Length: 239
Image 1 (cartoon, rainbow, N blue to C red):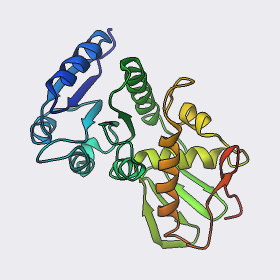
Image 2 (image 1 turned 90 degrees about the horizontal axis):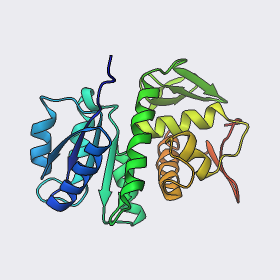
Image 3 (image 1 turned 180 degrees about the vertical axis):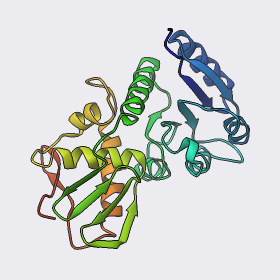
């Protein structure tokens, strides 16, 4: 039986970008649907199911961030990878995009091969997530529930923080390797599934920043994710 083709939605108000991405992704044997606005994209999403969504950030009426927020509010699209295309390289914009549910971002102008590599990695990661087991993991007092993408402290069910899917993946990997200091480059390969020298370390730093902000709501005096200077990040087993 032939392998089922993956269906990708590309949303950008630049028709040249849409055409370039549609041709490139089609050559990679993906089914590609395009939309020229956020409003059009939302109309397409409702009756269809996609395996990955590529969203331009700067669009009229509805920005890519706003579209992503609406997508994530639909349970059918809670786990579908979202890749942002952005001309904004400022940290605050990147952090905001990841916080509303984006999985990764590519800054325009981009190398087509780099974008295709990230698309393939995000799709592979999505397939792995569907095979997840051992939904609950605990290190120190920190408890992570993979079924609900939530974190809480042991013996305190009143304080629960909701994580995005990528924040959950990142935290789970750190917890599973709690005795190791992990570099951004290692995490790009292990959590995002990117080949060596693919991806941006700032992506990891932005997710770590968001993750720390959310976990601090559980206990502002504890440092759940430590920075090991010159190496990377490590879960605090004594938290």
